[in-house]
Amino acid sequence: MAAPQSPKKSKLTLYIIISLIAGVALGFTFNKTYLSEDNKALKGIDLSIRKVQGQLKLTSDSLVIRQLENQRKELGKERGALLTARDKKVEPFSLMADIFLRLIKMIVAPLVFTTLVVGVAKLGDISAVGRIGGKTLLWFLAASFTSLLLGMVLVNIFKPGIAMDLPLPEVSEIPGITNGGGLSLKVFLYHVFPSSVVEAMAKNEILQIVVFSLFFGVATAAIGEQGKVVITFMDACAHVILKLTGYVMNFAPLAVFGAMTAIIAQQGISILKTYSIFISEFYFGLFLLWLILALAGSVVIGKRIFGLVKRIKEPILLAFSTSSSEAAFPKTMEELQRFGCKDKIVSFVLPLGYSFNLDGSMMYMTFASLFIAQSYGMDLPIATQLSMLLVLMLTSKGIAGVPRASLVVIAGTLATFNIPEAGLALLLGIDPLLDMGRSATNVVGNSVATAVVSKWENALGARCPRVPNFNFLILLKIQSQILC
Image 1 (tube, one colour):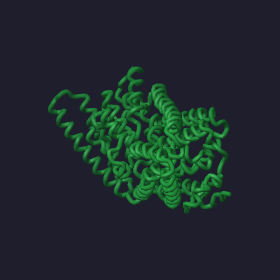
Image 2 (cartoon, rainbow, N blue to C red; image 1 turned 180 degrees about the horizontal axis):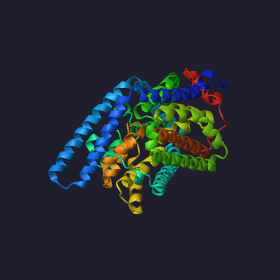
Image 3 (cartoon, rainbow, N blue to C red; image 1 turned 45 degrees about the horizontal axis):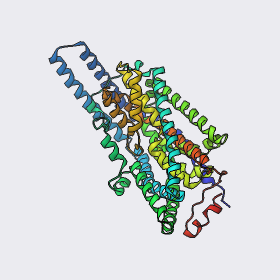
Image 4 (cartoon, rainbow, N blue to C red; image 1 turned 60 degrees about the vertical axis):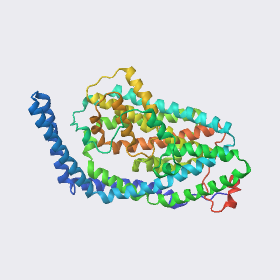
């Protein structure tokens, strides 16, 4: 019989909430005191950039235009230096979050590989893999299309970009964002198929790891009796990694505290007021998406959808507070098994979801791309917007684990549809706040997908109070008898 959940573990959510509140409070204090002078200087530079841009619109003299352009570039460099100096002051807090995320990324690649190989191998033959894979991808495509379409509809209804009047720096002043020349089938395919699984794991290329794991799992099942040794070994490795995850998760409250302190200290509560229209409309869209996903899930699993949402509240909170879907991956896997999803389905569907089913990120891409177009006064026809939606369906796959992945994809989409990429500057300041919501939504979307596929495969059992971590291979032989 499984042991009850430990009090220490059940209090992790409470500790994360306390850390979240404490981080916001300390960040607000730093913003008003420690970083006050830096923020005032940045506001002055932003005002100067706005004045220069206003003067550029009023003159046609080429000599004056050249002088104003040089002045704007100098102001941009000064602004970049100030941002760097400000970030240095809160670096100890951001390091707390960065170290935690590095520890999580250390776990994700081997966890995806071992669990997916075991999941595929336990499914048996290629026909079972194809059947479950087909159902999984069908749900993913439907959810992705719904997310993209919802973002497109809402941004056309609300039109948040029309109200924006903000300075836009040059493309060269937007750090860390490159578009690679827009949409490229060659680049996309290279991003899917690995040339080296070692390199894919080193770079946390989730989609490439998934492709290799699928081949490896099918081959393991195909060799019969000899493959059982590999499955047993991989299963043991997966449980060891899950145990390791438990150790890493103890540092989650510190990571949340550091991340929130750094973000609020740098941006300030005032940024919520400046971008209140865009932020509130985007989060309203995420709320609608949660409802749609829950309703769609309830059609398949019924009233258990409420139990699922309750079960995954800790992974949702962790993803929200760290702005990382990856941070919640191991915990989500554990909670889905406690909910009653069989391990072979969880091991197969959830890793695929991190490459093909990032619902929150998908909605953000259409919402943000059309928001930037509106900010420039560009009225895109519905046909063009639908073309953009289809392009994003392709280019958004496999972005898990890529820093600022959504912005990278948006940059390529803007280039494809001739929308000025400098508009990305409108999003950089608030992207961490938006990333929190879309990361939490990604967890919800993948959890619902896993529960639905489990139900379709008659692999959704009763709730398990605890998923055991076995330390000895002999106990793996009786796992199915003691799991619940």
